[in-house]
Length: 374
Ligand SMILES: Cc1ncc(COP(=O)(O)O)c(C=O)c1O
Image (cartoon, rainbow, N blue to C red; front, top):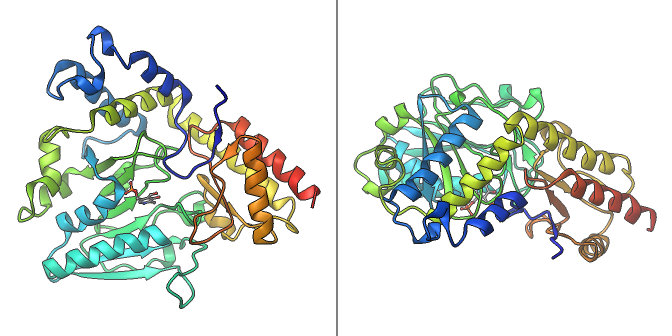
């Protein structure tokens, strides 16, 4: 079997050892004679997997005791609604820093909730252009971020997956300091690629299908203060406290998904954890941006240098037909998932944790060869 070099943006490549472990354990989890999918979520076999996934995540990210780790369902899109449902307060604004299409989606849901709860939404955007679709090529420096000290929270998207613009890669693009206003981060596409200080955030959340495991699960790390402060007049299932009080076992969790998360986290720990992962990811990004910058007559990164994403490397070729040819020829060499998002075009290389340096090196070599032939 020849596995593809998978550069998809999500669902994305999973670490081969995590998949192989699932294959080995599929019919018989820990000598129980049953698959993890067939076990009760209240039984000891599943509970051991669930607890290990939670404790590995706490260890890898050094999540402080002030924060709960929740495994929720419905992807990051559900959190777009669930966060305002929990945190919005009548007469108060929630602030959204919009640096791309996912931030726009989060604002869309926040506006619906604010109308229901008598709150308001204030936005600050780095998007330019008057059309329906704005152009996004940067994240703001901390000093550019304006926030209302009375806001319920400030939401940002730490990495805009479609545009390839990311916070906190360069020191000049650190996360803003919001003082007493809780900072909320959608980290779907840049969770777990490096260490970061969880205590700076009131909430961080991430859909699993990039760096954590299979789609459907969303991990949310929520400060205990916000869990307690959360509204009680919303359905129980949407309250963070419900899941915090029940160790994410209030209702039936996606057990196979949590099992795969455990496998991925165990693999990550075995590699040396987040510092080792960061070194590898920075090496991959340097190889790709190096190939782009070495040939400015052919390749162009639309993203401002200080905002360049380490996880989603976006670039253009001189014409759309050349971009199509690039994607088609790469595919013949076993490299898939390179077409940019339909809303922005171009090429997008997603280099999540499970993508080895060898794939990136092969792609960068192909970029050099492709441009020489034109
Ligand atoms: C930054 C970001 N936020 C949110 C989402 C939505 O995630 P989901 O499809 O799991 O709801 C995505 C999906 O790719 C994303 O990249």
